[in-house]
Length: 141
Image (cartoon, rainbow, N blue to C red; front, side, top):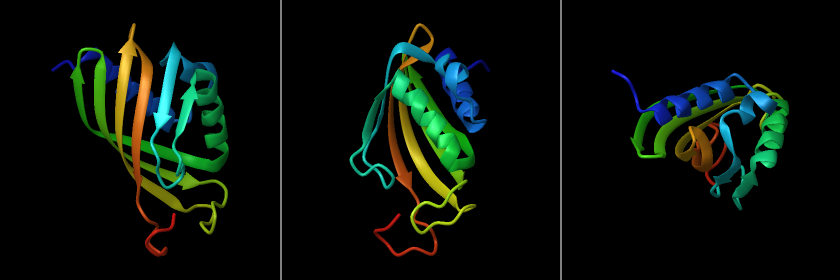
């Protein structure tokens, strides 16, 4: 059964990010006016808002910090030009992060809300819920 075209685009985008695409290959998923917002979470306690050039820079930086990552889309709902996704993420550290060593696997449960224009992402809002590392006390990353 065919999916909504924006759901298909959203899944392809997450698959591409899982493969570590960056630069022009990543930019193809975004509308030129794209804005990405991550609401406060364990890694960005104040949240972060990025326009497309900043999104592309963050992807490059992410490739230095995360050796490999995987996004699993568990659920997707589309209405018009909007898509809501439920995503599980794992990322393996390429460098130490605080007390976490190289090779540590971070896990997050993510709600992603995407708005499309002309088949490209115009807005992305992430609500990332990171799991506490098993060997860490509550209240720490």
